[in-house]
Amino acid sequence: MSAAAPTLPTIRPSRRLAELLETVRWAPAPRWGHSAAAHGRYVAYLGGSMLAWTLVGVGGAALLGQTLGLVG
Image (cartoon, rainbow, N blue to C red; front, side, top):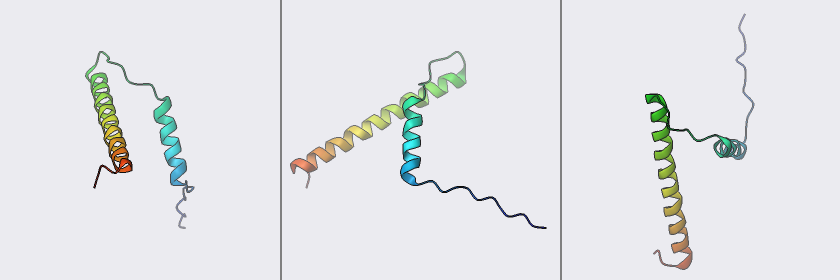
């Protein structure tokens, strides 16, 4: 007897993105704790946040520059 593999429901990419943004929006930021694991989570969060905001700023500046015709 062979069992059929269960199929997962298909979720649209826009819905997945919305769920990811909702999770990121409401997830608490890690705090500097007393263990090495807590320190690692905090440093990863801080570094990732800095990188993300830098990329958003550079992307926004590029978009603004292209809109104003400053970028070739």
